[in-house]
Length: 309
Figure 1 (cartoon, rainbow, N blue to C red):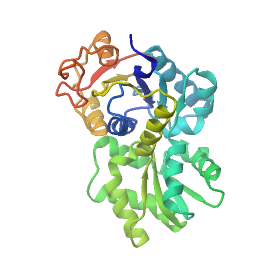
Figure 2: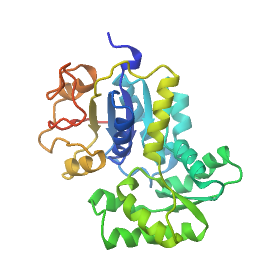
Figure 3: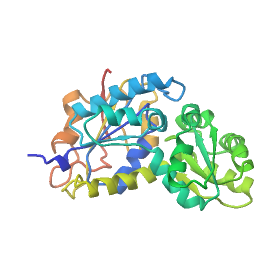
Figure 4: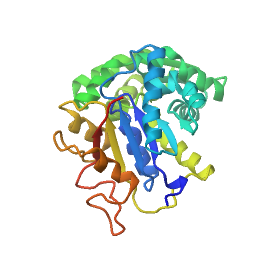
């Protein structure tokens, strides 16, 4: 029988950007099974009303609970900003977001100087990062900048060259002008553009500044949380990953693989519902190790299941 600690982690986002958090989790917690839900039919959440975001988030969380997860990681800055408290009230299991880990890492990196946050319009308008930073340091100010074009560039794979550099510069200029001496990547898409952001930050500031990746910070906090609560898996073999989506656009496989850093089965090769769940419910995936468990970098690609919400 599977113990509670050996149950999978649930992770969800409004689309596929949260796979950067999954990527960080698989590096930091390689033995954990993960079920990821990307609400690709209703992306983006960043332009939705808070009431709509809460409704969508509860729907996503309940799907993951139905898959038997032991905790939920909200891999979406917008949901973490406006719906995390409601999720914790409504759900009978731990819920962790990406705002506080990112804020904590930024406070440590900034050493009292102003923190700059790049995020979606919804995240910036919510004031979540200023509130999180204030809860950690009353002396540290936060400057926020909505950066919607960076989301589009990440999804299109336009990660290098003059266009992403100029777009990053346009969004970074007001932050550096406001005195920011560290930059938080407050959207799960933005780690893909880190090189351009780092380069333009250094150019504007006259030297390198700390760039805080909330995905990596979240993975560290999740690992500590699981260990402290006795929820870490007892296994030592590589964990499996199941990917649930609410729509399969033509660019799905390419975009998902870009964010995840692993092969993803192409359109038309999506596995059935039964097969898709096998990676986390039983050790039956093709391409597993001697114990029958799937490698996190299986050449077979990540299991994908399309669902309705």
